[in-house]
Each structure stands twice: as structure tokens, then as C-alpha cells.
Image (cartoon, rainbow, N blue to C red; front, side):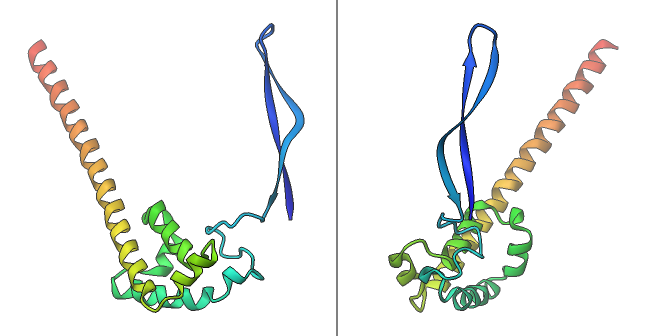
Amino acid sequence: LLRLQTFSTTINEDSNNVNVAAMATNSRVLGSSRSTSNPDYAADNALAEGRDKRKSKLDEELNKLGIDPNEMEQNPEQFGTAAMRTYNSFLLPKSKGALAVAESPTRARVVANNISFLVREFKADQEEWLRNVDRNRAEAVSKSEENTRVKH
């Protein structure tokens, strides 16, 4: 396990210099977190048992909805943070209660539907953002054309 040190920063008001004190205020052990973003997390942990079985069930349900789980894993930025967090949380639950829920027979379908919704919502937000950018550019072009006509 890798031990990380956190450092405090002090500002010397007289000289406007920033001094980083090498005093560790807290230390944390990397790898001790129950992170759902790391598929290699705690291979010996009881909560990680059954991950492959849950993954195959979820992947099957996602395929039924037209979502390629391999594409999700390879290009997570195309699916959004919320969908990826939901996907990973199902695979690696953080508590015994969450594990019990994840192991229920219909849970993979419910999670797949939730991911599908989150992906659609993410894509709609991206498209809305693009429409706004395009509209703003079009307005800027039309304003510059109006200014050009008025000057001549």
C-alpha cells in the first residue's frame, strides 16, 4: 500500500511568499478506500466476491438496451460520470446491505435501466450545450454582419 502525505500551506504576509510546510497534517493509505472506480479494488474483500457474475448480468441487460458495456469501460467520457458511477457501484458495492441488494435477481435490470436513463440524460445535456454554443456563434456572426452593413 502506498502512504500519501498531505501538506499544509502557509502564506507569509510580510513578503507575499507562499511556504509549503513539509509537515504532514494527515496521512492516508492509498488502497484502503472502498472506491468503486477501481475494478482491482480489494480482490480479497468479501464485498468484491461475485463481481464477475454481477458484471456479466449487468452487461447482458445493458446489451438488451442497446448500450455496449465494453464501450462504457473503454470510453467512459462518452457516457457521463453518473452512469459510470452507477455501473461501478453495482459491480463493487460499498456495504453488506448494498451487496445484498446487488445480488437480488432483478437488480441488474433495474441498474441497467437507470444507466440507460443517465446516458440519455448526459447526451441530451451535451446536445443542449452544443446547440447553445452554435446559437451564440450564429448570433455573433449576425451582429458582426449588421455592424459591417451599418458602417458602409
